[in-house]
Image 1 (cartoon, helix red, strand yellow):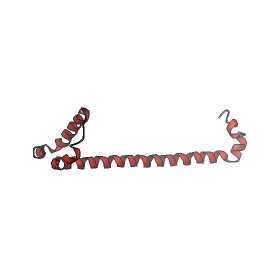
Image 2 (image 1 turned 60 degrees about the horizontal axis):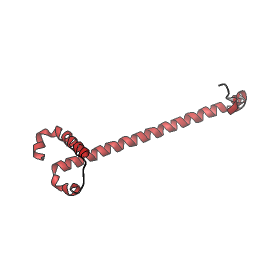
Image 3 (image 1 turned 60 degrees about the vertical axis):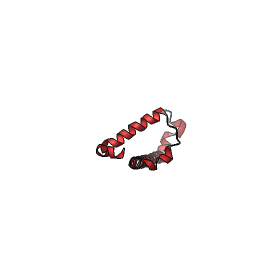
Image 4 (image 1 turned 180 degrees about the vertical axis):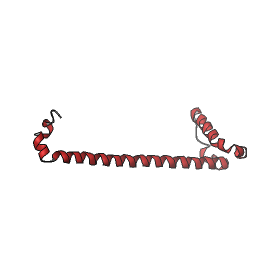
Length: 106
């Protein structure tokens, strides 16, 4: 690469000493380490999302089965119109697979 002498000195001496192989190995090792770190981070985020969705589903099911037991937790909270609309959509989405039993839950 033109101008690389500025960083590595004499190019021929650099290669003769095998330093180019050392740099290549260091860069490759760093990339492998980075890839492993990214994969672990992605797996952690995915696992957290799955756990969050599972807990949310369990809470929704519990609230639909015995709403009177949940009133105490939410009766003093304020909800905006946007949140209320989102809750209605979420409730409709949750009940749609259980249409047969929805009248018993309401």
